[in-house]
Every structure is written in C-alpha cells, then in structure tokens.
Image (cartoon, rainbow, N blue to C red):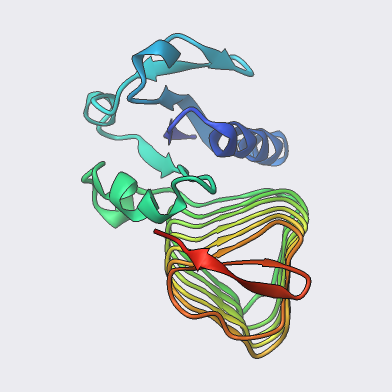
Length: 216
C-alpha cells in the first residue's frame, strides 16, 4: 500500500478520506498516515480514526509518503495555487484519488493531486487538470476542459465543449451551458445557470447567472 498524507484538515479532506476508504475496501491501495494542518488547534483531532499529525513539517518527516492537498472554499478559492505551492514539493509526489463509484471515460485525462468523489461522471475526451477537487454527483460532459486548481461542487452539470479556466470555483448545483468559456479565477454561485461566457476574476450568480462583482 502507498503511504499518504492529506492536507489540510477540512471538509474536502475528510470527504476525500471517505473516497479513499471506499477504494481500499475494493482494492487496498492507500495507507493514510494522517492529516496535516498548520492550525495547531487542530492537532491531535481525528476523523474516522485518522489523526492530525501536526504541521507541514510532516511532509519531510514522512519523505516517502505521497501528498494529497485539497484546500479551498468559496472564501479563499483564489488562493489555492499559492497555498498548495507553499508545500514546495514536486508534482510527481502528489497523489490522485478516484472514488470507485466514479465513471471515467477511457480517453479522459485526469491530473495529479486531483480528487474525484462519489458518483462523479467524467465523459469522453474530457481533460481535468492538476490540483482539482470534484465533489459528488457532478457530471463533466464530453470534450470539456477543467483547468488546474479548480474546485467543482456537488451536483454540478457541465455541458459539452465547456472550458473552465485555472483556479475557478463552481458552486454546488450549478449548470453550465455547452460551448461556453469560464475564464480563470471565477466563482459561479450555488445553483446558478450559466448561459454566457464569463470574463476573468468574476463572480457570477443567479438563474440565469449575472455578473455580481469582481472576485477581489
């Protein structure tokens, strides 16, 4: 089995552990050593029997372990690249985790440090970048591309030929029409229906989705 550390100790990380446990039940693959988090108040907490070992120094204490870094929420999604970059480890040390209930086309491409959770569907000729999190029951339809450092919520429907740029956050229940481009650094609000291209660093929300404001 492959030793694994999960960073940080948050909602995405705990849900990722559930995907790992489901995979291990079918085919023992991952030995989860523990969570790591820079918040000392979280040290020694645990979830499903897996403890928070301490801060990021554990990356070097367990130098042979692979790393899964899944930070991100609507408040700080635009910092994901910086947060992950501060771990300062090579790309080939990152793991990729796929829940066994996910359905992935044989010609799809999935990046490193990417997590596909329960019942995710990745259709034909889809490309998912590095450092992405896709939450349960989301469908990415044919010929769509998801850039690096994206978080895509649960029950999202991405139609065919959609391009989602680097560092985007797509809220749960969102719908994205075919042949659209969501530019880098954007947030699409929960339950929104996107029917037009979205320029960079914009928050879009509503049905149909409208420009709310700049991200920052």
